[in-house]
View (spheres, rainbow, N blue to C red):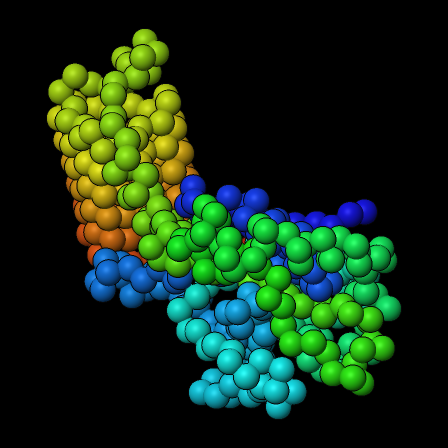
Length: 388
């Protein structure tokens, strides 16, 4: 097996940041000083205050990181346990401060969960079977190998490169593509802080460390995406899910379906704004108004309904006269006639009663499913009493 890349399914980078940016930095760092991984971080997106109900939010995804701008090296991130024990302070070792005296502390970056790694990382993971999360457990531990001699000595046999890259490193140091004087030819300069493929590596190992892993630094590189380089987001929260849909809607123009069957399902008296997306096989009845919304497939929208700024997943049913504003409806959600929902989220299969009015709530099926379970337990208890 060769070197590998870990990619999340919810990361959406801008066009100015293709995967090749990370791959190029990783290849350069591996050849120049034996780097073992490259990570990617981006500016945390903060929605406007009041744009979403407080109930939609979870804990902030941004976390403090320690990194070196000159060499593009990620140095320290706290584990969840570290944060629980001391949320107000960062504990750093003197060995780290000595090797990187000009490190930076940044609070506004979020991990993209894109990691380009050496094959040897898998060998270390095989030894550390207790690791549950690559990001929360393994990566913080891996960063400490860069400056803790005991860990370097213990795991050098797994992390040290198998092939010698002396000739490649020497050629790279003399390359005109990697000098500061030629940094201006980098097409990504100005948009990515740490993409310049310079060989200005971290401080050399001390005399006592030279025998541990040879000249390998076991460094973890970092690529930082600035806000002005383009909108970047991870769609892993409800506000982010709604935000990315709104941005997509701002770039589309709705037109009636070309398929005759789908066209027949859209009533001529329905009012649908241009910044709307409607999936196939969805029925929209007369005098219904839909604005700035994404409607899934196989949905049924009744007469005189009003839908503004919403996302409806597949197979939703909106009955006559219902009003929806800024909502996210899960698959198979049913909204009764003349019901009103404002800034609500529904779990798949949830049913809103006719005439009901709800604002700023998460609606799930746990209550009534729990009730069903209680009734079953009561029946079983009654049957057991009868048998006795």
